[in-house]
Image (cartoon, rainbow, N blue to C red; front, side):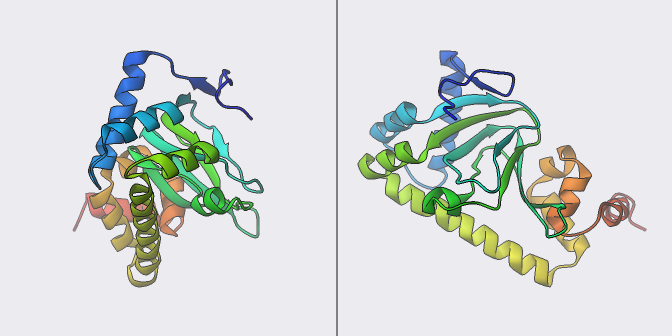
Length: 215
């Protein structure tokens, strides 16, 4: 699927110069939290990332396929989910922008993924395919360093989530999510949050009531 030319009710290429410029400023602001980004690298990003509006409910990349795009969330909410052995959806990550959101192993290794990237709301995204990503990584002054920092952050977040699931109670996991990502708790449907936290929706409702109305 060629997203550069695709214009329908699901994907829409954003062409307004002011809107596009604002989207890239969000990307560069995110990068500056980790390291400086020289003007030449900014220009490479503008050349190779494509700005898209994606409608709520869209599955950007599906399990059983090789994921071909790296996505930067400018605004909106996305989740990553897999299917359990009995066919149920298990949410493994939930995020609002700004942040990169990709099936990293599939994208980098070009292997078939078990993950699904799902837009929970309308989203504005900057997307780059693997070939253009390699161009930026090879030719940018600091691009390789930035890619390494992003992967380190992703791996550390995954490691910490495993630790939390083994050492924190369900209530403690919810309180940590509430502290670190209050917008997700506020705006994402409870069934997705419950799945992400590894509990059922009924238990999460009770935890929310306890937190809201402590005795």
